[in-house]
Length: 151
Image 1: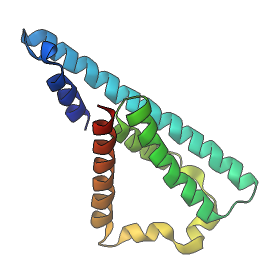
Image 2: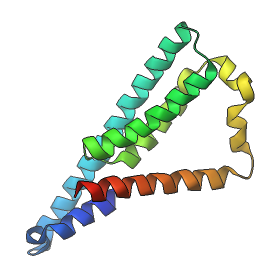
Image 3: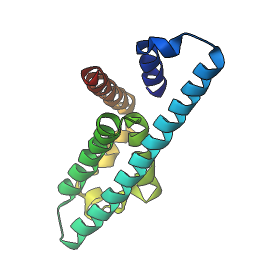
Image 4: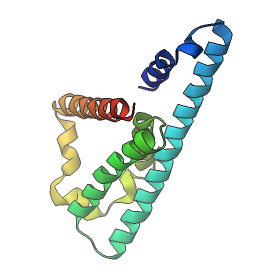
């Protein structure tokens, strides 16, 4: 998606598309670094905020379903803030968001979340690939709609 954004913007800018190749490659490298690092920063900040929000919710004895809703909502927020508002890579933001959550012990959600229904057990069967594919397709279409609407 990052490369799609770079080449899409480059194709729209005909002045940058003509001329020597070295300035074009430097422009591509610069945009790649900005999109990737910006997306990573958005994902990290969103992950940190999610972890703090879940800690606050645990102090108030919120239900496990509410914690799950916060994790899903914040993943969409990471994508939207990165892609639409800051114009960095929303896909990388979501990936870093998820990696941050895994690195911090599955968001440090309450134990009741795991007992509540074994929500994560749904990822242990053969439908894992199907769900991951559907989520990926959803983010692709969301990305395309945001990107095309903004131009």
